[in-house]
Length: 16
Image (cartoon, rainbow, N blue to C red):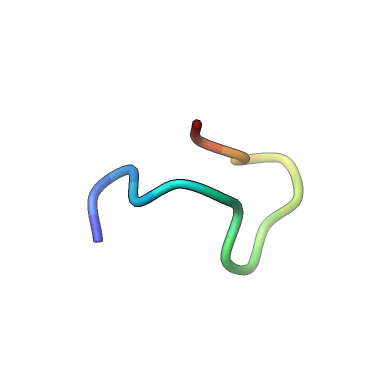
């Protein structure tokens, strides 16, 4: 999932 929405595992990579 490339930039799905919320951070799946890492709270630092919270892609919108």
